[in-house]
Image: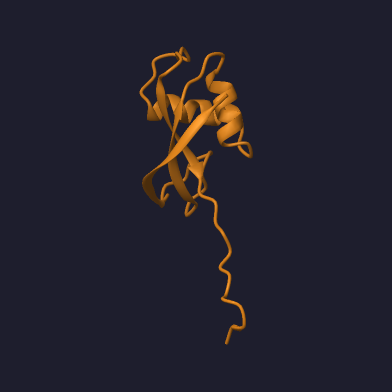
Length: 96
């Protein structure tokens, strides 16, 4: 089971990357490794629309991991696409 909490670092990526296209909004999440987790399972659960191989590489780079070995309780930073909620107008109001 993965436990993730979003931290306050967000921004707009300006460099081209196979995981995040140029101009894509992103955020970082912290994932606490649970027993049985692997970088692959974390990659697939946190960034399901991307190739897990690219996400695993990104996780290793962000966390300066020399190998794919991780352990329960370890906190990993993962770069994810930021989700957006469409704006909702107050009841009875219309757009110009």
